[in-house]
Length: 182
Image 1 (cartoon, rainbow, N blue to C red):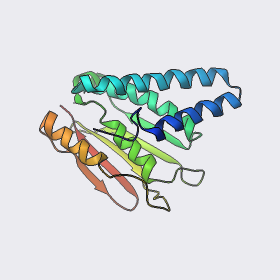
Image 2: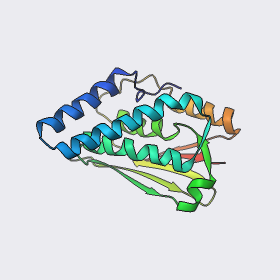
Image 3: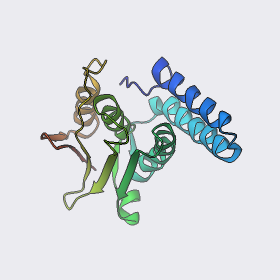
């Protein structure tokens, strides 16, 4: 699966370098070091993902913590994450590696995120053992530069690796994806 957040994608790479540059200019050494550390975790996880099929929910959520940090710095805390998953269930449930990344990437690609459009990505485990990822909808004014394969690839991976279908609900106010866990 190719996602725009892959390390070989120039947009993600250059946005990451711009993030480091901005932190260096602010002379915030501690935040800069943390950013570089989190960014290296992101690249490591993505590069190792081709050797994995299913991972624990805990592993995927820990990866998202690194990604969350980088994105919160990039968007100056106008993009925040809310994760509500029982600690015990994180080790019991599995999903395809890099399942959350294309969903978070879609939020950034398709929505305005600014002072007037603060974005909260919610990740919740429901009673059906589905990971529900949702966000408000703030459509960009211009059509996003995307090939539209992120969700289709994710759907294919869930069918191939788990023989389960993801569900997508979209309204004018909210976009929500249900990921079935194993």
